[in-house]
Length: 346
Image 1 (spheres, rainbow, N blue to C red):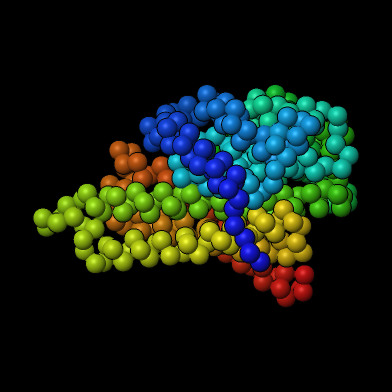
Image 2 (cartoon, rainbow, N blue to C red):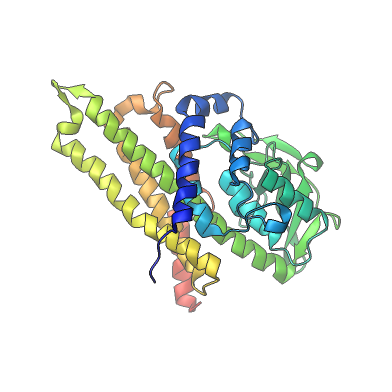
């Protein structure tokens, strides 16, 4: 397979990078810690660029593009630790809604609202349907899972129809919440095999989207750590001049460079409906989680204890990395899943 992003995809990525570099500084992320919100002026700006409608069909006001187009943008979101739920809304909730075979009439209006930047979504991890849901607190639409007679049932609820109990999180901008709700025929949008297929596909997409954000986080950690090593003086010299520190930072860059093509390839496999797409998603999440955790370990080691203090910006990226490394399956989870798939011959 020969894979490369198109000129248009790279231009879109660069435009988003320019906006986020200006609109999402470390100070902005700190402010979001104090007052987390799903929709902000920054979210409206992304909507104007077409980012929030990237995976929404053109006839509903979106761009009708795929995961390959989205992944570079989510990577940019990770690079600045974007507080808003870009990956969750655009990469997970919107495609899940759009892929429902017998979707209620209201789904079209919801997808239009997502494209316009006036709605955000949250999706429960089908493996732990009763666990807190990232982005649930303050979300406009929630896709939740219950046990049905023929397997999992998928339910769609408006945010104002659900009482969400906020749950403390290492990264408050993820807005974890525990939905308090009761399944009903009125909220049911898929059941049995249809729900299982949709949820399996969604779990794969979520793993790749999360992996893309981890790539951006890892890159930010490596770059910020290298900058710090050039500035921090010890024994009359910048610590970055010491061979041990050089090797640490370079060693963190290596797994990141290996993970990038794996994540991009998984996005392509899912877009193309490849039979090995699910395996590719697991490999991508495992590689990206490992790369980001190694970058976090090195960043904290080079910064020392100051790296975890509120005054140091690096802690914003560390917390998001540690949270996302476990979200939608840890590296160990996905390696076990991949092994099961290989042994079963799937």
